[in-house]
Length: 177
Image (cartoon, rainbow, N blue to C red; front, side):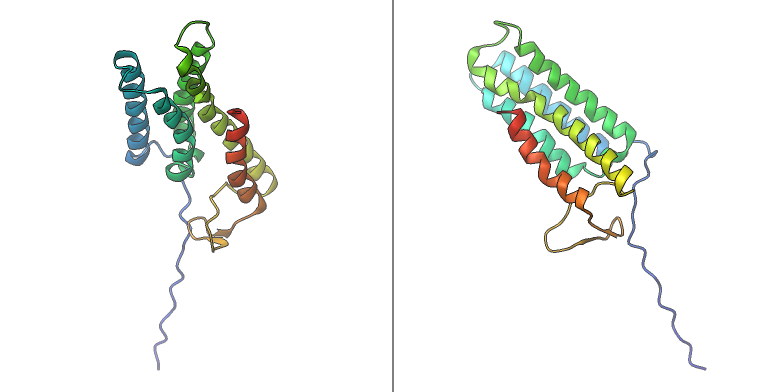
């Protein structure tokens, strides 16, 4: 007689479709990064008094942290990972170009040496992701402060999520030492 209202189970999982093509979010951030890189490199070439070597340092260190904040889950998609990898290979080429003697002024040398940081981040992300998938059978997620459950993935954080997340900064420091 009493109509019991059924509790509707809420599905918090919002998994990423690996085969999904690039969406506007990925295109926007990739285009934004390419635009900033082009502006910086052209600015360094045409206006060296305005664009200082410190701006290259900001780009090379900023891209990995930017990827952690805005693209960490999206890097699971093969297309997204490949495009970022190609962009980071371009930056690595900029680093290798600086290894040619007398190719750039000496005051730019230290800043250009940090251009290897984004490719090292992507390689370490790939390695941590493969370890996580093989041992824990889960994808990497970013642990949040104060909560041990990720609503988007519908699971608790595992040890590999913490190991990967807290290993990136020491890896960056060692690669740029």
